[in-house]
Amino acid sequence: MAGCRSWLLCLTVCAVSFFEANAEIKVTIPVGKLFTYELLREYFQNDFEPLSKLYAGRLYDDPMIFKCNQQSFPDLPEWLRFTQRHPYDNGFLYGTPTAPGKTIIEIFAINKRSYEAARHILVIKATAEKILPYEAEFFIKLREIEKVLPSSVQDEIKHDLQKLWDTEELEIVNITNALDRGGRVPLPLAGHFEGVYVKVASEQYFSDCLLRVLTAEHEKQCTAGAKVKVPGECNFCSIPSNCITWCKTELFDLTKQATAPPAPPVGSGILEDGGDFNPPESPPSRDFFPDYIVTVIVPLILAIILCLLLAYVMFGRREGVTKRNARTNQIQLYHHHTIHGNTDELRNMAGQRSSASPLSTLPMFNSRTLDRAPLRGDSPSIPLILAQHDPYSDTLPRK
Image (cartoon, rainbow, N blue to C red; front, top):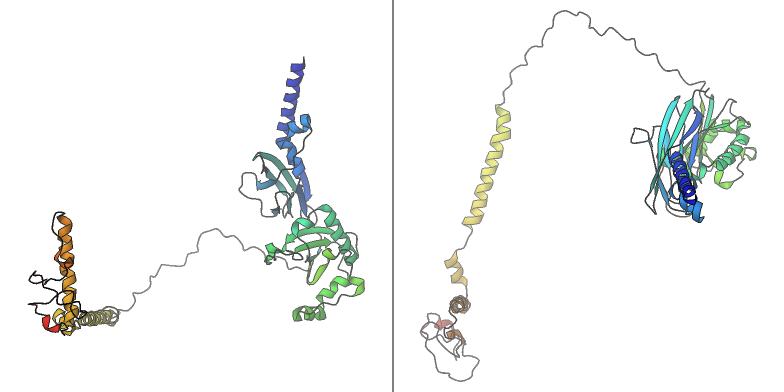
């Protein structure tokens, strides 16, 4: 009986895990409104370690990375973005749908500890809704995108902007990272942030504080790079990190936007009869001989001149062996020939191991006649190689 209960419990756990892993999460969002969905690591952790939670009561806090894409596509749709700063942080899907329809998003969570993977399905249904006519975009310099997407932070920013707009009917339309708008990557130091753009919309017209952005004085201050003076009644920044940059504030009145031009009429696709085809006349003849001279003859002449100059330098300027030997000192030339002779003698000895000692190692000998000469005293003026009966003996030093 106990074994049946254990099997039943295991089957129940497997079935729950299977249905959780393949369950669809359905979300409905109106067109033109901001959509945010937070990927909680705790939620996906249950898919990786369900048995340890039930039996051992042990919970893991594993690093995870998320991969999101539209079903049957390699990437997300154009209006949807994903961000995750670190494997220990939650991920966010955010964006503003531009047209009604149904979008299926596949979410893959990869456990960096055990390298397991879990798959979830997110179904986003965008419904048609009236577009609010007045929009305003603000730049928040001291924020980053993943710090603004939580609902609590959005409520703080929305509360300050409601006071600035002087209306409670305000909706956040879009949130964009400054890097996606051409911003520069900040330095990895404290106090440097990427910045975010927050766009809100309302049915009520702009307040007097917002209309100051359209004045010539405000544009002049922003162009000069001076600090914009904000009146006290227009400063509704309760949290310093949520303060807006006035010079990057833009207002959009959708009621005054020009309508798109009508599409051109579509014809039948058949060209009208315009008569017979008259081909153009042949172009006049052209003399290519000057071009031939410039492109072929002139480079050929220059190449011949360079070849003659190189031949003169290589062959006409050589001094020759006889002239070189005539300019060389006879003692130096004699020792040069002696070195060559000794080299040949050593090579011959290397081939015949039983040969006698080389004559060049004897105390005094004549390399020409191979005769030994008696020593005439230990004097530095006597050369090592005696030059008796030698054609170069007249050049050797004598006492």
